[in-house]
Length: 123
Image (tube, rainbow, N blue to C red; front, top):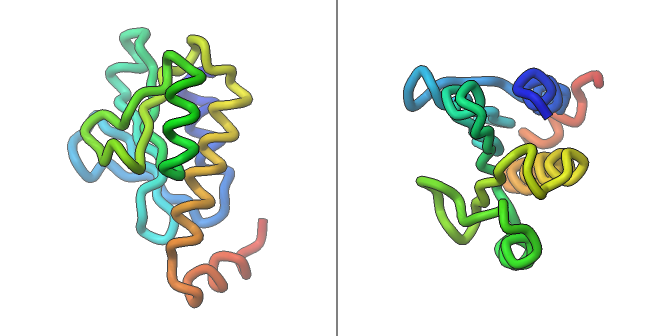
């Protein structure tokens, strides 16, 4: 997976916006104003691509046990976030699945009103 594929996949989800709230390096994707994916552009450019994704705590532990390149979230809550090293032992299909999972968790945490507004948007 390259940075363009990651970028396009995240933006293909309903009501996703991109931001640089921390600095000019950390690309953050949000749904309903809440973060679901983060990545350092400098790390991608230097050949060490990784993404931080929200994850169900039990699933996070299972994934960390199964994949060497899924670690507790860097600079994030270690319970709710994972850092996934991209283009290593985690297949691209799994990275996309984990992006979906993160988006779904964050979406589920939005107010019902906001969920309904997003659901009403065209695909």
